[in-house]
Structures are given as structure tokens and as C-alpha cells.
Length: 117
Image 1 (tube, rainbow, N blue to C red):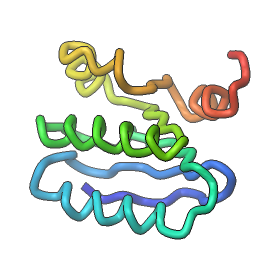
Image 2 (tube, rainbow, N blue to C red):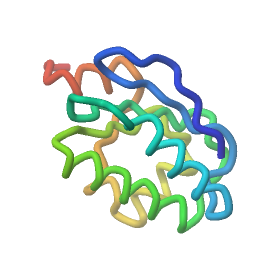
Image 3 (tube, rainbow, N blue to C red):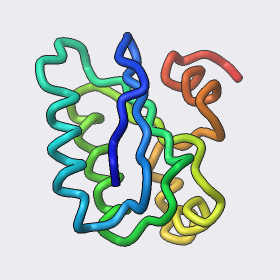
């Protein structure tokens, strides 16, 4: 998995590209640490999975861990543009009850800014 930064303003927009699997998650965690390094404000992050082709159990654990980490820092992670196959897995594992999910980036932006749909 590759983490690409799309923009870094008041809301950090990133995307996961490729399979979200265990072997590559150490690099993704390091990239996440670097993205958050030096941030004075709590992290407000939109994560697009639109180009995520596959996710394994390690990828699911990574999503939960990153979500928890941002939450403990007073921030928020919104996962959006989730492919149907990955969304089915999230629902089957009941992670849709744990993660903040949005249909697309505009909906994720409204959610993170506390705006009504």
C-alpha cells in the first residue's frame, strides 16, 4: 500500500493506493507518523480507499489502530470512497460501527466539519 498526500490544509487528505496488506503496513504506519509529526492541532484526516484494491486482517487492524490513535489525540479519521468489496468486509466485521465512514470526499468533509448533509 502506498499512502499519497492529496492536500495538507486544515484537513489532511490522503489516499491508500494498492492492496492494504500486512507486509506494507509498517511503511504505512511510518508514513502516518511522518504526516502527523509536528502538527499542533489534532489530526483531522480524510482517508480515501477508492484505489485500495484489497484489504487483509492486518489492514483492518491498521485502520482501527489509526482511528483510535487520531481519536486519542483529539482528532478524527474519516474513511471514504470505500470499494464495495472492502465495505462488505467492514460491515461483516462490524467495523462500520467503529470507523467513521462516508460515501465520498464531500460527505467526509461535511462530517469532519460538523456540517449537516
